[in-house]
Length: 196
Image 1 (spheres, rainbow, N blue to C red):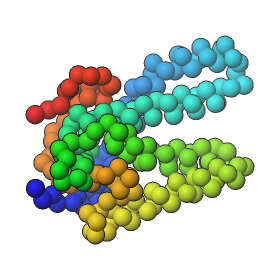
Image 2 (cartoon, rainbow, N blue to C red):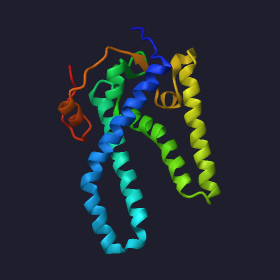
Image 3 (cartoon, one colour):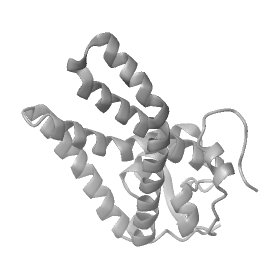
């Protein structure tokens, strides 16, 4: 079955919506995490306060991002909230594969998207580290390369994370958000909550 590649601007808008959703999920996770950080600070001392809050913030963000970019992609037939709202979907490129993602490609895809922003943030927090600057610039280069690849119609607009994981982003029917059900899809577990 022929699929039409999703246009760059629609993919970008879906990514921005997902970023906003991820920040909201991060905040929800930070509420119960804050007392734990305060207890840890009381136990090990206030000189580590900034480090504890930085680690907790990144842990909450990473957990929210896993829920959005891994579990939702698996359970919503390749659509995160943003992708569903804008009518795009992630599928394997193999024409003989079923048009659903497996856990491994979804997780690797998520890491390739997430890590550049993590390394840039860590580098910004440690401006004296040349090694971190090099890692951050390399990560930023992969992000820019992905943006350029998504703009080019050749090779089905596949980005670096698409090329590495054997996926592509296609046009698909739009999907409404069912908040309670969709949030449950962001949680780990064996229950199949996929919509049909």
